Length: 407
Image 1 (cartoon, rainbow, N blue to C red):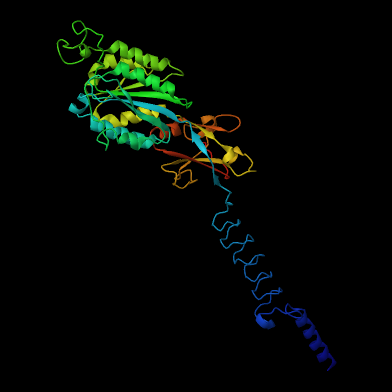
Image 2 (image 1 turned 180 degrees about the vertical axis):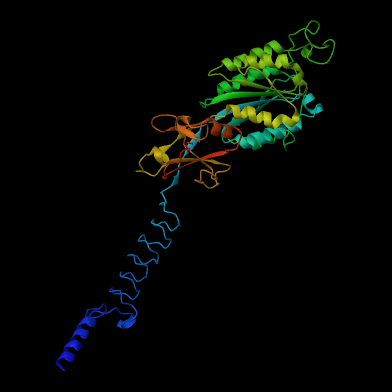
C-alpha cells in the first residue's frame, strides 16, 4: 500500500512540472486552452506572446520581425529585401541655347512646293526640342516688296514651337511667300537682333533658303552673274549677291561670342552649292546641308540636335532645408514628358546610369565638376537627347546612384 501511494505522488509531481501546470495559457475569459502548451500567455501555440503563430516577436503573421506581412526583412510592405529610400525630385536645368530661324519666303518656295513641307518639318523638330532650345523666327523678304529686308516675325523665346508653327507652312496665321531673296541684308539684321539679346545663352542661326541670294541694287545687271535662270539679268536686283551674303554670315560668326550660321539648301538652292558653301564656311559651319522635302525633318533634327547642349546644372538648393548634399544619391532619367514615372530598372526602365568620367562605354552621365553642381552626358546619352528621344531629363535624390555595369 505504501508503494502505491508513493507511485501516485510521483505521477502527480511529474504532471505538475509539465507546461500548463501552475500558470495556464488562457483564451478569452481566462479559460484554459488545452491545445496550447507553448508556455507563453497567448493561445497561438508558439513560444512568444504576440498573438500569432509565426514564432517571431511581432504580430504580422510572417516569420520575420519587421512588422509587415510580406515575408522579407524590411518594413516597406513589398516582397524584396531593399528598404525604400527617401526619394525626391529636384531641379536639373539643361543649358538652353537660342536658335534664330531665318526662313526664305521667296515666291519660289511656293512654286517649288517647299513652303508647306518646311513648315511641317520645323513644327515637328521644334516641338521635340523646345525644352532645350529657345526658337525665334525671321522671314525674308519680311514685307511683300520684292526685296524687303528680312525682320523678326517672332522673338526668340521659350516654348515657342506652337507660335512659330502658326506662322509658317499653312498655319492659321501663315505669312505666305513674296518675291526676292535678300539674304545679305537679312543676315545683317539677324546679327543686330542677336546682339540685342542679353540672356547669356549660346546663339545660332539656321538659314533655310531655296535659291541664290540677290536683291543687291548696287550690282550691275549688265556685268553681274545672274541669280535666275536667264542668260542675262534684266534688272540689278536679279544679280547674284554671294559676296555680301558671305560677308554677312562671317560678321555673325565673328560677333560677340560667335553666332554660327547653319545653311539648309532646299529645292533649286541645292544647285547653288558653291555659293551656299561659301556662306556656310564664312558662318563657321564649313558647308551647307542640302535637303529634299522628304528629308526636311531628319536634316533639321540633325542641325538642331547638333547645337543642343549635353551639359546640365544641378540646383541642390531645391532640396528640403537641412538635406545633406550627397552626390552618391543622385539618379537621372530619360523621359518623354514631365509626368512619366521614374523607373530604376537598368534593363527596362528609363534610368540613365552614372558612368564615371564616361570611361565605361558611351552610356550614362558623369559629374562635370568637383562640387557635383554640373552634369555632363556621355556620348550615347547625349545622342539620345539630340535626337529628341529624351525630351525631359528628370532627376531624383535619395536612392543610391545606379551605375553602369562594367562587363
